[in-house]
Length: 125
Image: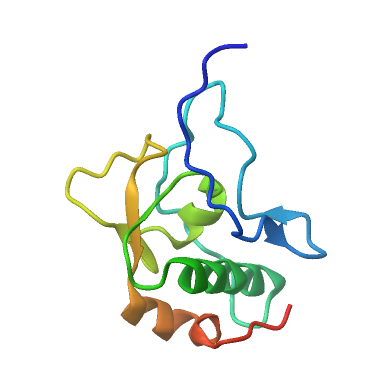
């Protein structure tokens, strides 16, 4: 097995959305290389299952990290990319989309505008 890059595992972060098969974290670094983070178009509209999943992921991010910058680590690239450039942004100018050590942060203003339910104390799944 090839040496995998170091990857912070966010202990206690939800692994996914219950009952959907959608993952929020990955178990190990990708042996074929780090999946790049990039803003993906979001087709999910309020009231859809996809919107609920995005909201649940943002809720988990907010309640785990709050307004502080955080390391990408084992957070799923596909999930992050659906929020990236909007609710989740690069935390520094030297952002590397191909690094598990890349620092991110929540744009609270945009997050509260697009997913107000994510900032409530409890998120009903």
